[in-house]
Length: 142
Image (cartoon, rainbow, N blue to C red; front, side, top):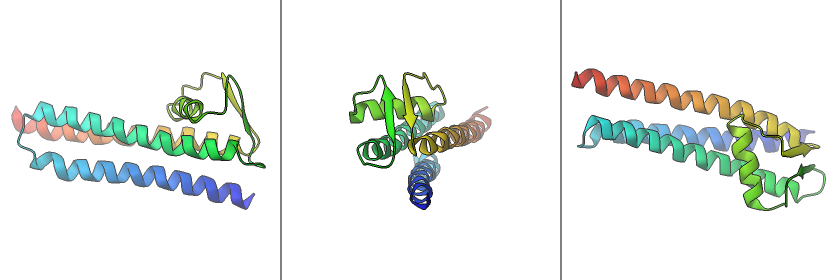
């Protein structure tokens, strides 16, 4: 059980670290750019989307290796074992959509649960960041 906690903690820490670095870089980069404030907002949104995609792939790689390693559980249902299916599953879990066409079994269920919570927190973190960026640029331009 300790291994499950450790692997889940490492995967979540990587995702949160990536998100922090993306938002930090955007915070330092956007004010220095000489462009329309609307373009800065679009760049911020695109940066947040890229950050989320990278985070989803971190979870997808973890699912892939856990699925193909004995003792971690399986992903079942409409699933062929490919990395792309792991990424699809990760996108549905991260966004909390959860279509239900792929189901986790065994210890993979714990990573699935923590990915949903992590995704929810990171999406709201991005929303807060973008709100503050929009407020900063729109107040100075009005």
